[in-house]
Length: 472
Ligand code: GAL
Image (cartoon, rainbow, N blue to C red; front, side, top):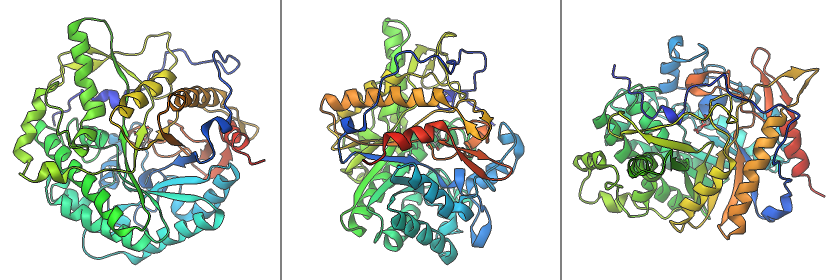
């Protein structure tokens, strides 16, 4: 299979020999004061069904593309899978109780489509509905606000067998699924998000083939992009229609791009990556169409566009979720279509376990870039870092992660201080989980997980949030 290397920068390979910040060294670490964010600011954690639930075939759940992908251990770097993950399916009560003690009152989760509709369409799995009912009710009893994500990458395998995101019928499949979720759970959930990072799941799943469902090629990619844009807007309309007083958004992966050198070629390369990383999904939803000019190959998407589609792709979301981890320095390259690539962080840069450069000012730049679209409300719906955690005497002193959060939050505050309406922050993530094709090695949690016993241990970063957000 054609395994295009490009867009590797979205997950980027782990880097081992770069400098990690020693725990006792904290340069430029700002103090964070919760009052500066304002009273109504939402603080929470983000999670995703496949990464935490486990119970992959419990109680009638159908197979998803991630169940299929990970059934071949060779697809995952550490040969693990999400069959058990963090066993949230059975441990949700304890987890939500623990989360509440951290004073993080907003819980973003995703519905597993194949738990609710094992075939993707048709017969509803009532036991799956029961699970989400109980989980949502537990949130509400504890005073945690649930934020529902409709699609976080785990398409039912039965739908992939029919072409998945490349088949235009997905607009109907997704609409029916959204109808189901909003009608069954919309009485208790106000905050909804439609798609998690469409740029990631279309490029990694349908262009480079590095993620499930391992499809690759330009035509598959462009079809998946167009159908995702249609679902994005249609999902928004269905939520607004079915949920009283809904607050509906969608989420985008994003990374501030800058040229490695100030030459015309470098600047153009940076613009091309900017289209792929930041512009491809938001601009059609704002009625601006696809950004063809900087990236002419996108014009080939025209053959999937029907006359009414430009209108159908439009939707005025109440908020946009921005998910940012790193910035991208770019240079021209021979990678097909985009002819640009990411420059590896300098050996002196601070990087995470994912090889991602820690670049707090990048979140300020990217928030400013999106604010130019006149978005009503911006929520940082994911941000966080995997670092090597050491469990010593029942504690995890993850000071580097605390430092990361402080620095990123400081730059979010800078954007807010300039008048940009940033209204919330969701840390990625609550507990160490199954990190897609990387497996369970990268630990992103505020809570440490012992994957053998499923014992949870709050890391110092979790305690830091607890202290930051404590009520007086
Ligand atoms: C995001 C994704 C999450 C999580 C995170 C950390 O792109 O939405 O599911 O994996 O990255 O890598």
